[in-house]
Length: 327
Image (cartoon, rainbow, N blue to C red):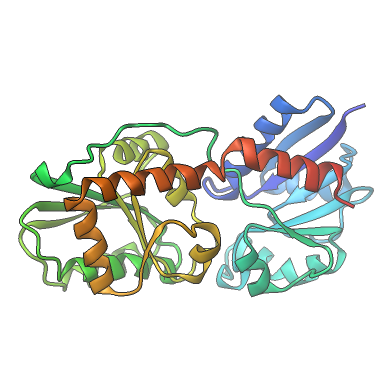
């Protein structure tokens, strides 16, 4: 008899929605003793409280109104929930995280940084990183950037939270002082309520004529993947993230990555280039452009790091820690 499991994700795409959908497929493809089901939507979420489908385990990134009847309940916390509070349905439901921590059989955090930040369930909690990529895409990059006339830089982020959005301004302010004879295009992918505010802030910054900032807004997955392929360097700065999905995706496309020295990255990306200030950023960027060995080494570090979050490493952890040896 297969163990029946539900993975519950928010209605909106991206984040837990995509991660859970892919994780369910991988678990079902690799393990014959479980029947994992992807659940999303308000009505299915409400129905799970009664648990008529007799799930043995319900794993949810959304808080419940009460503990589901006749099921083990695992709360999966992926973000700093008090920053998600709003007058929307999702924002109101986020108020239930503290209450859910009292009756959850186990709490899974997406990073140790997040577990320490929130602090619920010290005895019954665990850290399992999200399943982000199935395999590397292995698109070979030109490691002779110094011979190129134009350098394409990329970031993929969200403008739904101000502390994430401010990371874009942080990067562009660093680009203000770069002394480079090449044309630089910095493409910024992402949407959200703070996009207009950030674009207005950026428009007031003075940049050299050879630096072009391109805001694309929201793009679909294939469009983002094409940008990973055509870009030379991925840059990311944040003051809020609790993981780094787009960073891992960029690594899987053989992109060297530059990050700000945000405390989370010490945990999940210890071997990736991190910069403290503008001077440090310019030194690293110049090295990537002018030193082909350094550029190639950075690509290798990206591939080694993103393998940590591949299906081979992450999916068995969900199976063993959460489904088999969870209680």
